[in-house]
Amino acid sequence: MIPTVARAFSNTARSNRHVAVLGANGGIGQPLSLLCKLNNNVTKLSLLDLKGAPGVAADLSHIPTSAQVKGYNPENIGECLKGAEVVIIPAGVPRKPGMTRDDLFNTNASIVRDLVKAVAEHAPKASIQVVSNPVNSTVPIAAEVLKKAGVFDANKLFGVTTLDVTRASTFIAESSGKPTEGPNYTVPVYGGHSGKTILPLISQAQPKTELQKEVHEALVNRIQFGGDEVVKAKDGAGSATLSMAFAAAKFADEFIQGLNGKSVTVPSFVNLNHVAGGKEIQKEIGAELEYFSVPVTLGPNGVEKVSSIGQISDYEKQLFAEALGELQKNIEKGVAFANAN
Ligand code: NAD
Ligand code: LMR
Image 1 (cartoon, rainbow, N blue to C red):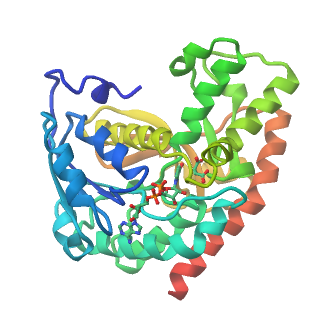
Image 2: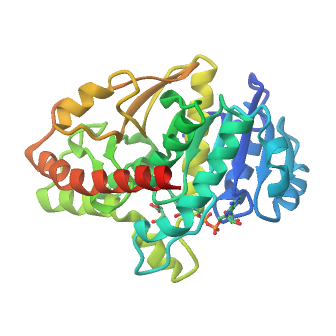
């Protein structure tokens, strides 16, 4: 699923790409940094955290791959970001059992705001890929900060929803009685990244999959609440880190493939007002939502276009209707925070 990472030790063609990970000493940050170090398309890897990033970088620097890796403390964020083309942000606190992603807002909103301010100043042309929750709000915060700084480019700002797509592939294979076939299934996942706002369209799964109604509904519910499954199992020790590191590394790799001229289409949470095809999606969903996860085609300048939703079942229409109100509130909360602070 991550071709260039899977071939990390082979002599495949390289591109000179500079990736920065902000929050690199965390549960996601460490394995994500490892996966970026294994990606031969990455030649420079800059790691930042409140503390510990130089240690993570020293450790990774002993691996014989192309990326030159260096760790930074916050006072050197400018040096860390200089020349970065891809900035992945997993900085922020994770959930504990009983919490919603929105409960993280009070802590993570200002973390994302301040890091994105620094990106706007030191790497204004970089793609920003936000992992920190609540994604439904942190991406609008990032966009408002970039707008204020005069460097907003909707084609390069993403909320990373790849973990929902990853889960959908895995769980649909299990539901179909073919648990080892996960990577061979694709399910487009629309909407946002929290509970009912996560909208997996099983009717558009490839290969086409017929499931009994109860199995289909249980599958949708498991994809929507997959994050809670991990939070519960970790029992107070945080949320998904390893599968998330995989997902963020996969999305960054797909973005880099696009930069390198290989067109890739994958779902991501983007600004529908400012990407090609976004207004058509708003018409299809019957709401002027500013942000939505949709399949995006990535190219040398980031998003080239977003694909239309097309035919969906009545059950899926109902799921969409249930999601829109909550997603709109999450988006407005992020925009209001960024404009008040
Ligand atoms: P963690 O606590 O293990 O790691 C977070 C790291 O961020 C820590 O090392 C911390 O020092 C660092 N950090 C905090 N503020 C910082 C700042 N201002 N500058 C630089 N670094 C800073 O948490 P985690 O498990 O890695 O999760 C991180 C975030 O990712 C959480 O908000 C979590 O909810 C989110 N997440 C999102 C998805 C998704 O699908 N988008 C999936 C899983 C987790
Ligand atoms: C996930 O989906 O695993 C993440 O958003 C983390 C969480 O809080 O569930």
